[in-house]
Every structure is written in C-alpha cells, then in structure tokens.
Image: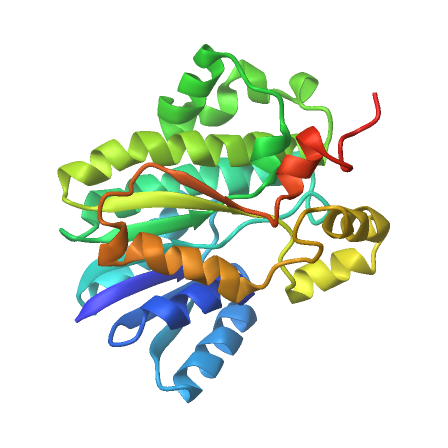
Amino acid sequence: MDVMILTGAGQIGMAIARRMGYGKKIVIGDKKTENAQAISKIMNDAGFDTVPMEMDLSSRESIKNLISEAQKYGDIKMLVNAAGVSPSQAPIEAILKVDLYGTAVLLEEVGKVIAKGGTGVTISSQSGHRMPALSPEADEQLAVTPAEDLLKLDILQPENIKDTLHAYQMAKRCNEKRVMAESVKWGERGARINSISPGIIVTPLAIDEFNGPRGDFYKNMFAKCPAGRPGTADEVANVAELLMSEKGAFITGADFLIDGGATASYFYGPLKPEV
C-alpha cells in the first residue's frame, strides 16, 4: 500500500490530504496527539484510512520514529508538511528550532526513503517573500548547511534576529532554499519536492489571530490585497493537487506564492509600508 505522511494536523494539511490521500494509508503526525486524533477521526469518518501519531518536528528522533511507523504500511509516496509555529505562538528559539531546523530535517529524512515517483509539498509562508533579499552566501548557507549545524549559522544568532516575525521570515526563506537543494537529492530517487507559500488562510488559528492583538493588521492586509479577502485551505489544496499529481511532473524545487496578491500590494500597492 502507498503511504502519505501528513505532519501538522490542521486545516491546510487536511485539505491537501483529502485531495491526494484517497486509496493511501495516511500517517498523521502532530505535536499535540489530540489534534492528530481529531483530524484522523474526521478523515476516517469520510472514508479515508488514517492513523494518528505524536510527532515533534523539532526532534530528529521523533521524525525518524514517524517515518519508520509509516514504512510498516508500505512505500512512502507522499509527504505533506504543514507543521510549524507562528510568530505570535512561540519565542524566537522555538520558531527556529521547529520551522527552520525541523523542516530541514523532515525533508532530509523523508528524502532518504521516498519511493520512485513520490512527491512532497511543504507549507512555507508569504512571510519569506516580504524580507529583503539575503546575500547569495547566506542563501547558500540556508540551502545546504548540514541540518545539525543550521542553528549555529551567524545569521541565525540571537543578536541578528530582531523579533519573532524576523525569525519566522528567516525560517520560511530557509524552507524555500532547502526545498531547492533537497529537490536535487529527491530527484536522484525519481521523486519531487516543492513548497507553497500561503498568505492569510482562514483556519481556527487565523481566526484567533483576527481576534487577537494583531487582528487589525491582518484584516487590513486582506482588505488591501488585490483579491480583497483571505483565502481558504481548499485553495491551497488546489495548488498542492497540481504539484503532487502527474500534471506537475516537471515541477520540482519550486515555491508557489498563494496570497491573493498581498505581497504584490506590499511592494507596489496600498500595503507598502510607510518609510
């Protein structure tokens, strides 16, 4: 039986798994077991074949444990990584450990076992597109530094990270660069890996943000983007379906920005920051 690994039991991950996971065993990993169990129940009640597991993205041992469990069911053909923490959920250190280091380890470890013809998507963020360009040297460091040495890079030291948003942006920039580098290795196994950078997508987490201290900032962002609204998890799944199906067979090592034009508005429209 072909197996899909889904990390991060949230709305975006579930939407993609529902689109691509029929006929496969889906192993759902989340740091909060109750979240994995909740998504597993929804999907099983809809006819999917899923099993929930605890998985901590910041731990290589935990990731390897999830992969070895998945291998008990068959060949790993798909990875959907939607795990991570947001700038208002966690301190700088945790964001770098989970979103930056953890994603790098997950792509590396799954890349060692992904079956021929396999595909993966990792969920990045529009945030990575907002930050000024890094130097070519810094980009290359983020792309190819051995995962265990990533957090030792100068650019990621506390004195060089302004706040949690900056840490998150660095993590998402690293995700993009890492996907490019990993796509070369995945290609040696006949597999593909891409990233998707969503803008504001309505999920329970986003609704918390809308009602929280940064709520006005978010509402302003989607009001002033060309689409004039936030997105839905299913719209992210539409792109994931292209990338993970045969229609996307020539696409690997790429990042797809799905943000209703918010980044365009940030650089060249009404969302442009006042200097």
